[in-house]
Length: 221
Image (spheres, rainbow, N blue to C red):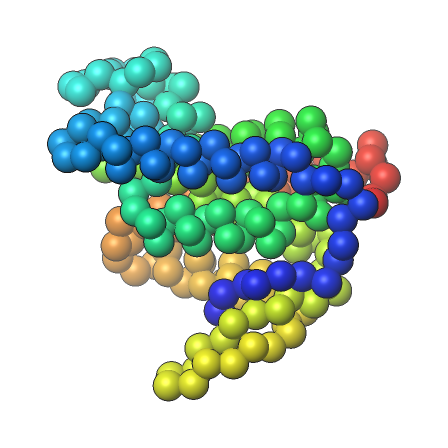
């Protein structure tokens, strides 16, 4: 299922959501311009590598920042067109309403914090892994968790693939995101295929927790 849009208009312009999408896109374009092996080297220097973070070791090629800070840099780097397109589409569909509800600054902090928690969730499960971890998936999962709790009745216009048929349906957010979260849990029990499923799970739960902590101090838009 691919989300296309929701039915909840924003009362404010989503500056932060758009800025995050633009930054991620510019970084990805820069990666492409570097070519090979420059692009691969850039990824390795910005990725969060569990072993390096848990052991505070910066192995070659050395990162642009100390290992713990790669938890932030890795959020803005992607491994391919489908990787960044999927993340940015979900952020575009769901991010504006969460930003609207939290306020711009709070949403920005929320995005970064849930992204870090998401990465730490993966690292906690695979502390000795040397596989680079990149992408905005964990932070975006945090946004999805927040949306799930705050806007469960929203209708999500969704592109649905049914074997050889493709259709567009309106699916309640609680169903769409609940199914998405269930798929992350089920997928975490099989071969990872290079995807940090635990980061998705940790990010989603961090998003829900973030709403419970922030919402008492914010009025929903």
